[in-house]
Length: 239
Image (cartoon, rainbow, N blue to C red; front, side, top):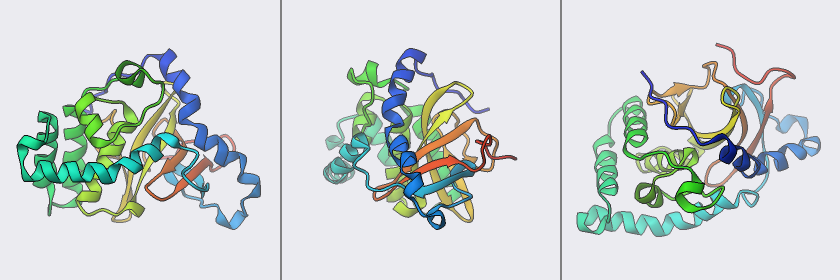
């Protein structure tokens, strides 16, 4: 059975919602100026999606992107000499990634999602960093713990290393209508399917499941998308 991760205190999570959804609001506000033929029906989680411009509206993600090249050097040093890793979790992560190379994609997704969900405890940004919205790099996450978007980020970078491309993946910020809280997860498009790697579930889901998620915006290393419901009053995909 999928294990539920601890959820943030509602007061903290709702304060974070404004920052988490900032990029989505900016993109949706611009929808009136977007030509109809640029809208993609059948977007993530049954939404209509469109490219919403640069990543500048999401400074937390921009900060992570700028630090990834530096972290790659530290990770390479760790791979050469385990004494340079600095944390048992980092050592375990590197061993897990190596063990997954050349395995079938389904195995890679399942084992990586399960491993990262279980090795790092959930901790809110307020508790961890004294900030309302702080996105961590992979090494920061493994050293300090983190929350939903941090799980998605390290899964994203791990799968890049395992051979998936930037264009196949997105970090997706959603509104969880069941808990009435913002949430983030990783989507992976491969083999004609969209897979969802979620810190709330140890099993890998697919986006044709009837999940209580309304996508707000999504990002990868180069692009940002805004999402709106496919139909008025319809925010979730049907089974």
